[in-house]
Length: 259
Image (cartoon, rainbow, N blue to C red):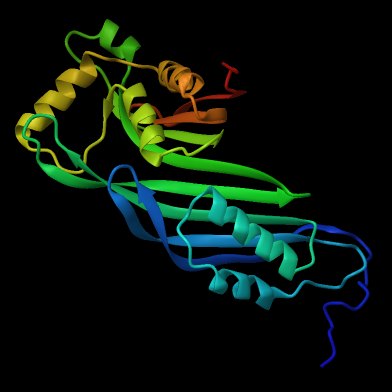
C-alpha cells in the first residue's frame, strides 16, 4: 500500500516533536522495601521528524508501547525510548509518564492508617544514545504564615501548599525519598485520615513550625543538595493562600554540588 507519511512534505520544515498523547497504560512501580505497586499512567510519546517527510507513523508508537511490559525504572524506560526511536527511524525520542502513587500514612497521634496519593511523573528524552531522565512528584503540605503568627494574638492564617520536585539522578532514586523531603519542608505534612487527637497534634506542630514559601523551598533544596543520588533538581512551592486572592510562589533550580 502507498506510504503517504513518507511522501514529501508540502512545507519542508522539520518538526521537533510529533506523536501521540493521552494514552492509558497499566504499569508497576517499585515501592521502597515493599516490592511493587500497580497503577495506571497517562503516556505521551514523541519523536522528531525531518523536513522531507510529510508525516510520522502513529501506529508504531502504539506497537512499541504494546510490546513493553516491564516495570518502570531507568533501564526499562531507556529500552522503551530506544524501541520508539528505532521503530520510527528517528534521531530523538521523548516519553512522558504521569501516574498516581499511593503510600500508607499513619496519623501522628492515633496511628490511624490512610492512603495518601501523590501525582508523579517520569520524563525521558533519548538523543544520540544519551538519555535525559527526570523523576517528579507533587506533594501537598500545610504552611502557617510566620508574619501572621507574629502579629496576631494566638492565631495565624494557614493553608495547603504544593511542593513540586523534579530531579535527575544517578543510580536509583526512590519516590519515597522525594516525598519525605517535600513533607519535611512544610509546617506540617498533610494526612488522608485524622481523628480529633490527630488534628490537635497537626495543628499544634504546624503552628510551632511556621514557614513562608521561601522557607519551604529552601528547606527542600537543602535536602536535595545533600541527597547522594540527586545530580540536578527543580523545586517549586505554591501556597494556596487562605486570606489572599492569589497564591504565593517560590522556586529553586540547580545542579546538586559534586561531593
